[in-house]
Amino acid sequence: QKEVEQNSGPLSVPEGAIASLNCTYSDRVSQSFFWYRQYSGKSPELIMSIYSNGDKEDGRFTAQLNKASQYVSLLIRDSQPSDSATYLCAVGGGYQKVTFGTGTKLQVIP
Amino acid sequence: DTAVSQTPKYLVTQMGNDKSIKCEQNLGHDTMYWYKQDSKKFLKIMFSYNNKELIINETVPNRFSPKSPDKAHLNLHINSLELGDSAVYFCASSQGGQDRDQPQHFGDGTRLSIL
Image 1 (spheres, rainbow over the protein chains, first blue to last red):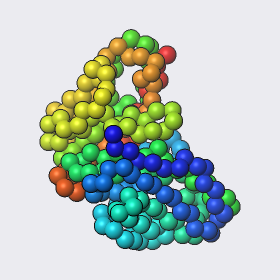
Image 2 (image 1 turned 180 degrees about the vertical axis):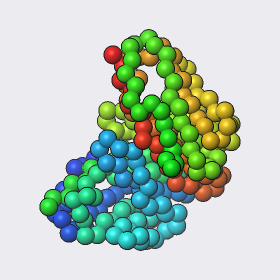
Image 3 (image 1 turned 120 degrees about the vertical axis):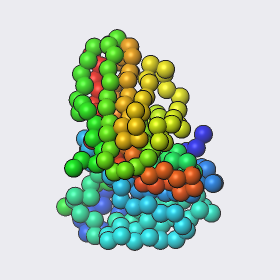
């Protein structure tokens, strides 16, 4: 059974700080990694996708992938109250079979 | 201009009834999915179709039957609804690929409540 693990939180950070969200996965052959944001009562929306080891930056967001450690993280710089949401890590092994983690709830305190 | 649209948004019905949820995408994607998100917010894949062909069929009661008339549509029919079926059902779509999974785009969800 492929597993994707996230700390459920809540993770509380002050406004303007860096929020660090972590995710580990069990399937070594996983090739595709995604971070989604889900506001309460809304649908998941894609923030970042990453396929290669290293860092990928998009605005205030940075995804970090380490396949050897089976670890993927998301950093949010200059956190804003509007970033308060649940962040879902998703891992795929090809053929469009993607497994989602249970999500980490982030609270940004003004 | 909604990319992935689901109907209805809310569905309140009695136990034992049969209901359907419809999904349409206008993104030109060839893969569509149904997910169930329970009260604990865990998003679990139920089914996936690629070009009208069923490619993912997770352990789901056979009361749930998907149907894809074409690659832009994926419907979900549920027979004999039970209390445990209460959840939010999300439709999603993506461009298919064997090696590299593509990001999925989600509909707004259908909130199903069983009385």
